[in-house]
Amino acid sequence: KDGWIWTGTSDGLCYYIPESDFFGTIGPENRGPGLFIQDIIADNDGNIWIVTYTGIIRYTKATGSTKIFPAGQYFVPLSADMSSNGDIWFCATDGKIYRYDVQNEAFTGIRVLDSEELSSSARLINILDRGDGGLIVASSTAGLKLVEPGSSRVSTLPDDSRQFSKMLIRTASMYDEDEIWIGTETGIHIYSLSRGFVTNLQKINTDPYSLSNNAIRSITRDREGGVWIGTFYGGVSYLPGDYKSFEKFYPTGLPGSLNGNVVREMQADSEGNIWIGTEDAGLFRYDPR
View (tube, one colour):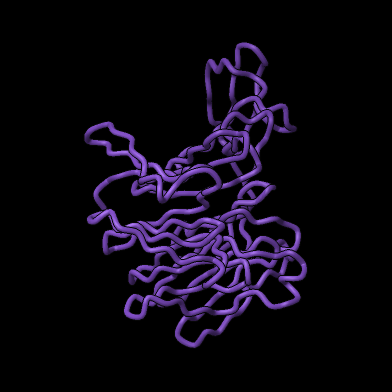
């Protein structure tokens, strides 16, 4: 909430203060060789929660103090998320999600993956908050799970097309109250809670406006509605918030695409067709119907 940027590395924790353009590191007792940081989240009480393979570190920014929750004593964490009511949740390697109990400084677990799913190497990825609709937990190969924290009831979101069985999920993000964007090794799959799978965004080699890479690692939506997509060896792709404003026509090499870059004139005929005259590739007729 102070605007600091926290960065986890394979060798400890760094922070950046935009106002002073300053980078710093948390003291040597909390970092060093072998401290591979997997996830970071800030809570509403000024704490920074740091997820590592060896356990969880709670760093209190105001005092500089730390509290360590060793994996051997609690669980091996994979990721951390905060719900809209301020609860801190963790995904763990044992197939459970854990909520941190502030009063007792303890964790309460809910089993999400069953023994069969765990034996097939499925693992939990991250947790999405639906408010009164509960939590949605993404798993690598067992699809999306709906969790009701009050009753600990867990169900698998329906998939009539069996898309979940074909994908390796790396991350998931709530786009709005109905849509979930799922980052996989085959691009972004958009899942609607009311309609099921909607579409699959992928890299198209001949399309400069497509994803830069199909191996998705992170998806973040900014306050303007734009979506930032981190890829594996493809850099970052950005999709503006109002991404359906324009339909683009340009040479892609695919059947039915426009083959010319230099458009001289366009005219509509009485039947609703658009005639496109190009300088370098002749005349095209486009039927918007």
